[in-house]
Image (cartoon, rainbow, N blue to C red; front, top):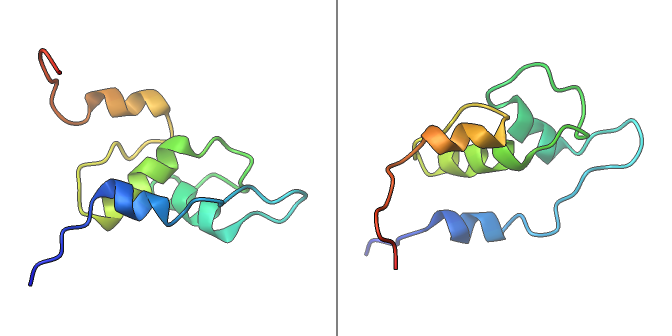
Length: 83
């Protein structure tokens, strides 16, 4: 029996994750940030792209390997005339 898991299914498991106030960073967010970049010292860095890269990494999907949100414009294929 093969079970299909989507990126959305995995992403839902992270609902509620947030930055930690003060000098201590949320270790989950820090792990996402450091997957492709060594410099983040805390979770105050915008982590939207890091989150997408982490989910893609878990599912072995193509990723941008960048913390820049716009880096995702170069991933995947354009869809013409989407419904």
